[in-house]
Length: 289
Ligand code: HH2
Image (cartoon, rainbow, N blue to C red):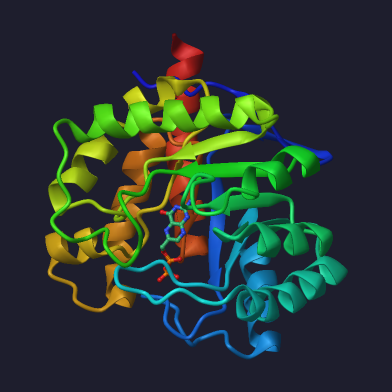
């Protein structure tokens, strides 16, 4: 039986309860080249409208990215990343108090995003790409998502190998939690993420999804981002990311039922419905035990 631990996640001056129900993080990429929504929201007003729409649809967090991290993506200069994301965050903040996370590996972008009103740093390099990122996190007391990635987006899908992928990702995340704590980031601010699709084969991704209960033992809440990723295309035969909706919902249901606290997704309405079902079933399990 799955029991999800309850956490009070500290995101600057906000406390977010995790574990009573599954939170949904809606994806907003203001990039030309993201694997699923690339180019859809290059117009700032379309990006802001999409963020507000996702909040209305039930997203608890809007995750804004200005640099694609899909396999083979080219890095973006910090000035360009800032130019893409900051006006969007400012406009969202004028109109909504939805939680906002900034999906970046760059400390300067994170810092500017937090000034503009973001609450959470989502760093897919777990503070490895930019040595100043951990300082920004510690000083601002932002919520942080520490994700596992093997290598960099440019190299990560070059024949990734592990002995035991769940053990290795688990040990890596424990090490990053320790590193962050040593540098002044409070544990109450941290969420961990196995990094589905970041230096993993189809089988590695499946093992990690099966291993969520083990990963959830690390003492921090767990975020899972499987939405529309290529392993779902591989399993279902759906070539176009937008056609991977049903497969993504299957992964969402599995992850929530196995103990994930937050799901990072493209399809907010459907995922919220899935979470409603799974959360109700989990609550029933709890009340009968
Ligand atoms: N996946 C992507 C980007 N950021 N952050 C976390 N914490 N977890 C993830 O699994 C994750 C992430 C990649 O997906 P997407 O943003 O849709 O595409 P792209 O990187 O091409 O912009």
